[in-house]
Length: 454
Image (tube, rainbow, N blue to C red; front, side):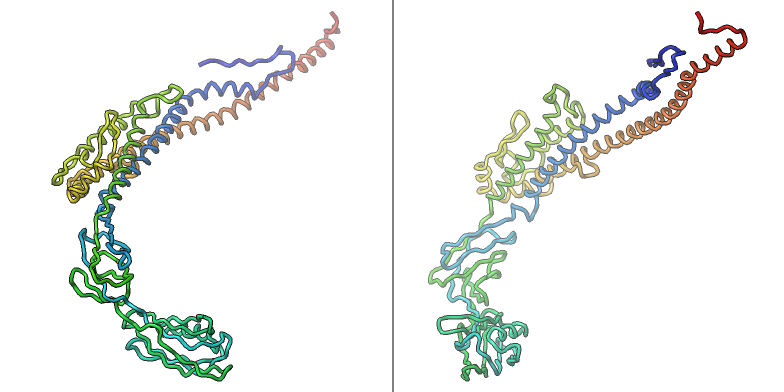
C-alpha cells in the first residue's frame, strides 16, 4: 500500500497544511479495499437484470403453452354457422358443445304480451285505477294518486310497484299512450289489463287494447319438438345459444365445429414466445456492443436452460397419429429457433383433431411434459432454476453490501480520528513562528544580543 506524506512549507513558515485534503488522501488508499466488492456487485446486478428478462419471457412462454394445455382453453372452443341466417343465427357455442350438425325447423316465433291505452295528451290529468294480471298470477291494482296522475308519473308508479310489467309512455300522431309490456316472455307472461282510468282533463274514459299476445316459440331440433318462451334458445343444443329470427318450412342446418383458427393462433404465439427465450439465452453467449462479455456469459444456468428446452421439444408421449411437435406445423431450425406453418397445423387439426388435443393435454403428453420443464426453469417457482440463481446472487449482494457498509463505517470513524489528530498537529506547526519569536526575545533579554541584527 502506498504512503501519504504531509505537504507543507518550511516548518517555521506557520502555514501548516490542508487537513481535509490530507485526510481524503489517506482514506482513499484504504477505500481501495471496496473496489473488488463494488465491481462484483455491479456484475451481480447485471446478471439479475438478465435473469429478470429471461424469467419474464419464460413466463410468457408458459402462459402461451397454458392456452393449449388448458382443458377449457382454445382446444375446447367451438364456433357455429347457420344455413339460413334470416331464420336462425348462432349467438355462442361454449366448450361443452359437441362438434356436429343439427337440423332445426322453426314453426313459430315467441312473442311478449303487451297492452296500450287509448291516446291522450301527455299533460292531461288522470283518475281511477288499473288492474294488471301477468299470466296466472294474482291481479294487482294501481290506483292513481296525486303524485301519479299523468301518463309519465303513472308509468313510474307502476314500475316502482313491481307488478311484472315494464311501463312507459309512447307517442304517435294521435297523442301519447301508456305502454305495458310483460316482463315474462311467452304464454306465461300473457297480460290481462282492465282500466277504470278517466282523463279528467277531457272527461273521457281511458280504454286499453291488446298489442301482442304472449306466445311461445315452437321449433323442432333434430326431430324433437321444443317450445321456448324466448326467441333466444340456449337449452335445445348443449352449450349452444341461437337466436330465432323467422319461421321456416324447410330445415335450417346448424353446424358446430372446433375453433381450429384460435388453436393455430395459440400455437403461433407459443412458437414466438419460445423463440424469444432462445434469443435471450443465445445473446448471453456472446459480447455486448462494446465488446464486453454479456452478464451471463459462461453461466451454467444458461446452458441448463438451453439443454432442457431443446430436449422438451422431443418429449411427451404420442397421442394416436400425433407423436411429434413437427406434426403441429413446427420445424426446429439449426440455431434452435422454431418456424411455424399454419397450413400444416390446420391440416393435422382437420384430420386428427382429438389426437392433437391428446398430444397437448393427456397425462405424459408433450404439453404437460413441456409445462413441467418450464416450471423447473421458472423465475417464480421456488424450485425454478432462474429463481434459485437470482436468490443466490441476492444472498451474495447482501453479504457484499454489508461488507461495504461496515468498511464505510470504519472509514468514517477513522476520518474523524485523523481529522482531530491532524488538526492538533497543524495547530502546533502554525504556532512555531510565534514560539520562535518568543525564544528570540528571551535570548535577547538575557544576552543583550539582538538576533534580528545580522
